[in-house]
Length: 327
Image 1 (cartoon, rainbow, N blue to C red):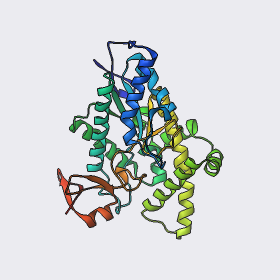
Image 2 (cartoon, rainbow, N blue to C red):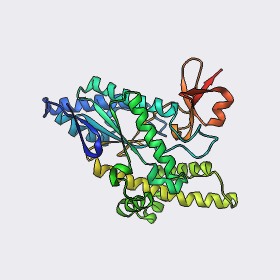
Image 3 (cartoon, rainbow, N blue to C red):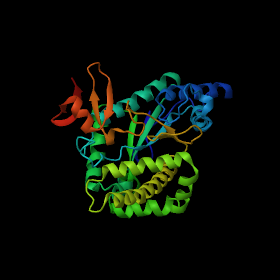
Image 4 (cartoon, rainbow, N blue to C red):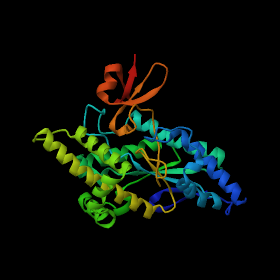
């Protein structure tokens, strides 16, 4: 029967703990679960044909719940808010991109249950308030996005998903600025540590460059020169990286033992597993930085709004812009 867990998340209990079977049986189940995830891995690696053995960190994360016969808990930082750039998105509320991404995550849990009956859950760790001052999106828009995301999960009947954000951590009686300060002070790494990693570690450098590019593209107005904007975005990118790591540490404290998913591309050997939510021409593209174009054959992909509207007509859902239909 379900019970309520930390931060109101629904947790499934199993009557068969500890789960019977040998260590080899448990290892085989962990490999089967990881095999289910591998086709959706988000990565910049060029090699193909990955096998579970190439991801020892993920196998270790699966080992404890599988051995105990418990549901697997995935944490996924993301779904923060819509980009403020109107050339990328249809508005500030979730649309077809989020709907399809949420349905994919729920269906992925169903596929995992086919190879591991206790099943899985995904806690979407919505991080918009963590970064809103750095990405220059009003907190009221982030609240509206988060509320609409929860409503969408309920409307779609996605029973394997939960949402976790700073409101669950610190409640409603504190300002968003105060919450951000607490997270940063307690969990963020030193700025010089990140600067050093950006110089020495290729995945960190790629992440820094990707965030800088997003910030540059998403800046709606800037009074200075292009070079001044680039400097400002580089500065803010380090702040985003600090807060991202801080949010990850906070999530780990609130959801210990969870399997760590990421919406960013992740290399082999990372403790995080990059997950691709929808097809996109850019490995960094997400539903909140783009919109959906549906092709005549039913295939859907993420594109920036400016590109999608050249290829299709706008479709409304419940009176709101939803996506584009090609043809």
